Image 1: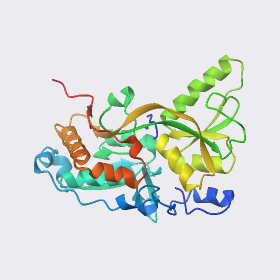
Image 2 (image 1 turned 180 degrees about the vertical axis):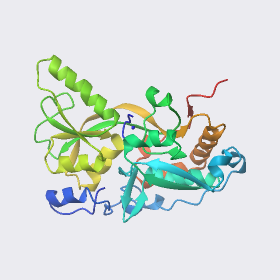
Image 3 (image 1 turned 135 degrees about the vertical axis):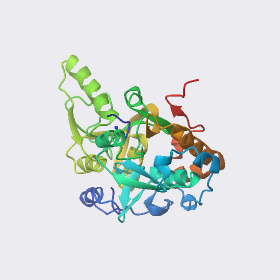
Length: 310
């Protein structure tokens, strides 16, 4: 994410060491009551119906985007349950929602994996036609791109089950803490470190990883004492490691995710906003979020940011 609040865990195995190995591998065993495709959500919600095309919205998509019948989306596929690889296929909440948006516009949505901090530069350079990768909407990004809100998430912390170091989010001074590179959690930890050193305490040892799954692995293998990530990512990590992790503190700094589009593309942003709003209104959006167990982040209105003039 520049910055994001954000924004591959294998089948559960009996030991912490094996669960740690699983965290890097990309397949997830269903939990009791879990959703299809490894999602820890509602099994009954796992089958998402095909979405009907809206001709009026489809007509708003710029000709250079729809000429090949596809929208190419940049994405960092290491952020379960939002976007990750399972059995060789990209899956997740953002993937299902992106495909449904495409169906509403009469276009196929395809996803290309990228390092997170390379996605917006790639979009600006014309490599991608959209980006959907748990990007938090913030002022810095809005200077470069347009963003359509579609979900709400905050920052959350995790430690090993039982919290052996008895940590809180305010007692991380001197501790090794994992975080994904380029996320808003990096800035969060920088601010916390400044408070530590300003109070004469040792700095937080921030361990930045290119992939969120590597941050997960660092915690489960006890190389760090805690990690920070987006709230749905922490929830998911706890579930797929069979509760060998636990949340520390409360979710904070809640903010919307935005689907990212290049500026100056006519009615493109309005077409995407209209598609998302239609999915919210017809219940498809709710079913997708329930499939992945992230319905607590649902919004009722999709909005273009920055708002169109006039």
